[in-house]
Length: 459
Ligand code: ADP
Ligand code: MG
Image (cartoon, rainbow, N blue to C red; front, side):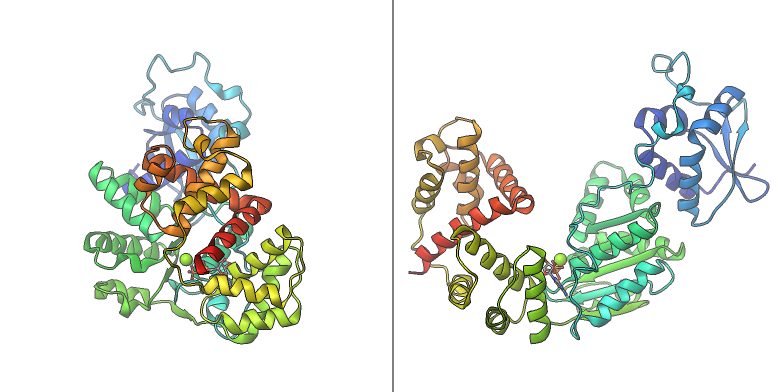
């Protein structure tokens, strides 16, 4: 039988490697030959009847899925005994009895859930996206693509300034495809990650693995492709990935802060391909949309803004939805911490802080004092090596506040916190950010502290 196109085999294997327990994959599938069968199906060579039974019983499901996903169509799979088909099992790891008795389900790490942790924000769904004249086309295109990936518009290219909803739309598309087609392989990543992974794969001489990963996707979404500007090598790789996926009718979705022709140094052939499907621009929202977004952000957090507050904020924040959202959150958080109503007076104060010009008045000592007072912990303890939570959490918060309010380099922050190195500081700041995402009360506390400190700064 003819061996399968090596690239296809590679894709099938890459898919299996992600969905099957690693030891089973290594033992049974890493080297199993895949061949084109007589009837257009796929034959998988196995060394004996024993192995054939095991494949039939425990591996058929995942292999069929991998084949269908990689080929983009349904093909029958047969297990064919070929005495020359070796399963290179090292004797010491070969089980005396193959784990054939295990129920098939246990073979899969994940069955219907996505094979990759996409780190999606659950709030970035179509439901939570407020539609208005400034984003209607981009929204409609994303929706259409999610309903018929690979068929509607390919590629979909969304561009717009920062904070206008590019990432939100891309992730909404992921959520929606995932809900409709649980077995589709979806890959969402910032372009920076693509570039870094590519460079790393060159260094480690693992370019083939790198390619297998991205080319195994049914829907590939790359956020912020303007990051390709001035990166010739990565553009070349991106170009080939584009061709491979689009030729195989896989859906491609990109976002960028500029239209293709305006991305500096972007190769013409790539720019023109970005225009092949549909290009949709996100504009800054109009007043009504801004007001609707504010109401929706409040509702999401179980709050209601009075009309005059909505108008006031929507009049003053015009260009960036992220700023609108953070003003809304700050309003809610401050009202919560200060146990007061959300009214126009509070809105005025919040917006003042929002637009305050940073001055050099605020010092590291101010921040240390504020944290020390708030958490009842001594500054000297925060600077010590003590690691109990009652000390390490305020220490991490101090690092976070110094970083966000004063923009001091990480190394220097370490100096203020008892000589911690910059990776420790970075880790601590990451912990604070993660907790702010998941714990609203915690976020309210931090934002309150930050707001108080900023007030100090602007007086
Ligand atoms: P970008 O990727 O374009 O910089 P994001 O997608 O990160 O922008 O959006 C910034 C913030 O604004 C996000 O929290 C997002 O949920 C919110 N946002 C953007 N557009 C909308 C919209 N139309 N409706 C509701 N929220 C939105
Ligand atoms: Mg973004």
